[in-house]
Length: 290
Ligand code: SAM
Image 1 (cartoon, rainbow, N blue to C red):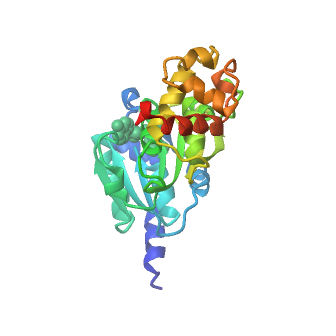
Image 2: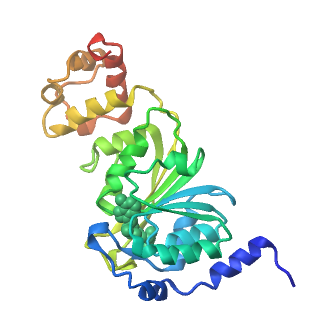
Image 3: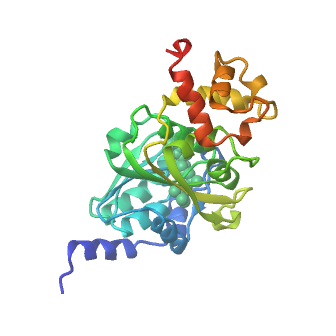
């Protein structure tokens, strides 16, 4: 019996050697400097992929495929994957995976902080990554602060240290609530999809991890992102201080609070995302910020 091309690809992917064997064959010893903690459990990887709002044939931009566990799960779910990996040692494994994928995996050898993901993956791609810890927040902030919104990416499903995931999803009033929470929740629906203990990784990192899913949407209060960031940077820069102190250096910010009826003796962490966006909205009309 001759199978369909999709069935042939599924068979070729299923016939690949176990990830552990691939890692051993290439001597891919985890490099701490590259944030390498691999996920090798295909069931777990399939679960992560199920939390992506993915339709067959959708494109996915993956940062740091490493030995390609998440990549395999994405390909098995029918996605086309554009993966950027910095470590040349992983390339032979990824090339074998690409051959098995029937052309659905494109590998880019490079630094995710330097490539243009929009040019590589195109409009409407999803982002998926088990992110290297040292650059995860930097990458996310870059994806969240694009001037054009809605952005090129349709969803982002990202593994972070649990503590960073909690900061992204934190509600007002909690100790994890800060600049990243406001920025992420202002522009996206945010959800922690899954918690993973350190032992799920090879080698295990020092801390637990969590998968966060972000889906971009139009903000309730659209303001220039740079201005919102200015307000939250000032407010959370001195998070234990009252707003009348922390926002003192921002021209007219105290008048903005008064106009909005926000008590200046409150602290940054008690303000909602809407409150911060409202302050930025008032300042956007102010000639001092034009
Ligand atoms: N996706 C694999 C998995 O889940 O098993 C590996 C995840 S590991 C936490 C992070 C991966 O990102 C490593 O493969 C590492 O080499 C890669 N990496 C680190 N810094 C990078 C960068 N600046 N650009 C692209 N990849 C990077």
